[in-house]
Structures are given as structure tokens and as C-alpha cells.
Length: 292
Image 1 (spheres, one colour):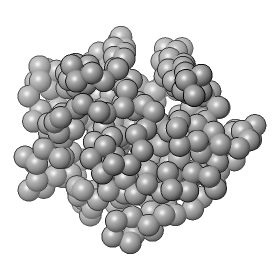
Image 2 (cartoon, rainbow, N blue to C red):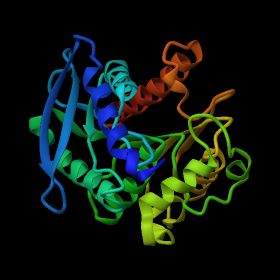
Image 3 (tube, rainbow, N blue to C red):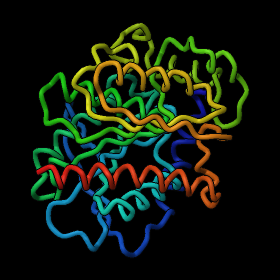
Image 4 (cartoon, rainbow, N blue to C red):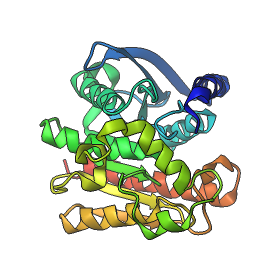
């Protein structure tokens, strides 16, 4: 992760994202909202054509070490989530390091959430059925966003879905010490990522969801971890912290997996895990419907 090369990789990743198509049964609406500093934040709303009126919505925060834009497999995931859970998916193209360090990305995500709540009617969103989903660094943003939403008194999301999330800037877990050379992602890359993301604010608890106590009052959670991933143990610990705080939390510990395993999109196991995520979404959205 060399900062001078990041603009090239960012441009390449955006190119791959643009080239990825979505099923013809999904429409994509592109627009912007204003972030905290007036920045025009790009958003994309993925909607199954069969949806009519107010529907559930998943705020999707992509991974990429806080440095890379969403790639083609993220677009595949959003389409799968939208069709599988009969929900809209709002994609946030938040700002990236090294140009925009913490808290720019997180504040962009908060601005997107506030916008979707305020404009729910025109976007076709049921504010009682909003979820926040993020993978890897997007998981850090998703978890951090739930803290901001609670502390700033916005309507609470129905649930959060954290997929092999980045959560703890301290990087002291056993899995962080063990997995120093695993493919896709490892502890050495993780340290570089945190250094780029936080700069001089590395000890600020607000940067690191695992340190951002208290956890009481956060939305229920689905947390997924990989077996061979330096991030595994911090996510397991975060799940326990949520449970201890009275937050209903499901921990899914996948087997034989590494970070970003969904890149093997056609793998039977990849598709099984994606179905498990969608089943959780369906259950939560349907339960909230019955509870009205």
C-alpha cells in the first residue's frame, strides 16, 4: 500500500466498477447529497424493478482499506442484496485516503444516512427498515456510523451487517499477531492502512469502533469473520462487547476463508455465505413488518 501509487489504483478500480453491469431487473439512480463541508457526495440507489412504494433500504459502505473505491464485486454484492432481500441499496462513494483522512469518510457516510432519512419518501424508503452494511474498512465505517447515529439522535437503523470488519486500531489480537502474510490482507498491510487513515489521530477512540464505548443502544448486528484473517479476533471481541451491552448479535464464523473470499464469486461456498447474509436481511425486514 504505497501512497504514491494509490491514484493509479483508485482510477483502475473505478474503471472496473463502471464496467460491471447489473441485472436488467435492477434500476440504478445516480445523484448527490451535500456532506458536512459542502462536498457533493455521489450516491447510487439500486432498486429492483418489482419494488413499489416505500421499501427496506440497505446503506452500503464498501471496503478497500479506506484507500480504494468500490470495485466490480461490490456492485455484484449490491445487486444480489437488492434482489435477494427485496430492498433498495444506497451506495455511498465516500472520500478516500491519502487525500481525505479520518473523519472525512465517516462524515460522508453520516451525511448519506441523514439524507436518506430526510428524503425517504421521495427515495421510496421505509425509514423503519433501514440497514447499514459494510465490508472490511466499510465495516469500520458501518460500525462507527451506528455510534454517530445514536449520539446525534437520528432514527436508529434496524440492523448493522459487518462483514470481516476493521474495528480496532490497537491491533493487539492473536489473529493480528498470527496472520502477517496471508493473501489479500494481512497484519502488515493493516498497520499501513491505519497509519494512512488516522495520521496523528491514531489514539483517538472515535476512530476505532472497538474503543468507542459505550455500546448500549446500538442496532442489532450480524458480524461475519473469516478463519484465516488478521481481523478475525477483533470482530469476535466486538460481537461479545455488543452482546454484553444487550445488543442482539449474530456472529457467523466462516470456515476455510480468507479476507475478501467473495472475489471467488462462483464458488459454492461464496454463494452459500451470501445466501446466509440475505437470509438474515430477509428475517430482519420481515420481522419488523410483523412487529408494526
